[in-house]
Amino acid sequence: MNYNPDMQACLNHNITTQGYYSAEQLQLPLDLGISIDSHDPLWSFLSVMRRINLNKYLKSHRGNQGYNAQMLCKAVLFAYMNRIYSLRDMEQACRTDLRFLYLTRETKPSFMAFQRFISTKFIDFSSDLFTEINDVIANMDHVNTHVLFLDGTKLEANANKFTFVWKKTAEKTLGKELERAAETLDKLREDTGYRLPCRQITADRMDEILAQISAWCHRKRIVFVYGTGRRKTEVQRHYDELLKEQKAIIDCQNRISACGPVKSLNLLNTCMSSKSL
Image 1: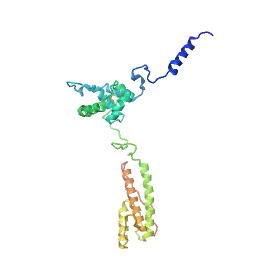
Image 2 (image 1 turned 180 degrees about the horizontal axis):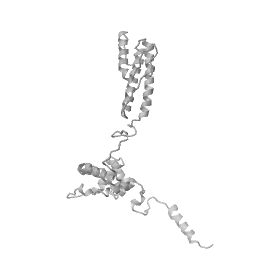
Image 3 (image 1 turned 90 degrees about the horizontal axis):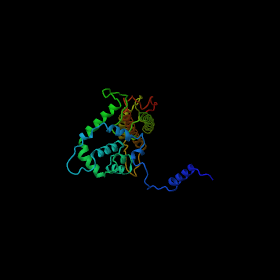
Image 4 (image 1 turned 60 degrees about the vertical axis):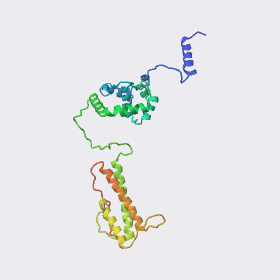
């Protein structure tokens, strides 16, 4: 059998990398930056920070300097950028997150180090620093800050996926609530036999309608009862349903108004029957 050096190299490779794998074995490269994806936001963050002179914000003092102030400042800013606001979460990130390990050069500051830095230094210049960061980003991306573009979009100051107002959903829900209110009004008409002039009834007239029903019940000596074990009359049950539907209608109108002007919405698009409430 002829000796094949390529085959021998392949055998040696299989032995060293597959047969004797160990997570504790030292392995090159030692530079953590090589292991971070080239498209990671960390590089954009560092590109911005290279254009900012942090020395003018961080004044040195006598005695033990502790952790490098610029390193702590960058770690705090990068943590805020990734929505990490807890001091203990910052400490954990500096121990386990490859990007923070690279950013801090594996110094692993404790949560108390972050607390002291933020309360004694960072809080004093954070506003000016954020302003400068905004200016640097605007210059890098050639943003004209003298022109303001509006597209009609309204966003909450602390918006998230649970607080957004979806106008189409609110309008659809409002239509369903109006239909339910119309059905409840028809049931009240059957229960009371009380009549109103035949005309369109809008959501704005809900208070007036409820007041008239309440007055009718008072004249008929119909007492509304509440609490466990007390039986409600049909009129009261439908009256309470109408109160809930009115609250839902108002909530839908408020959500729609947050998105822009509210159009006039009718509770009933057509006149009720001759036996209307």
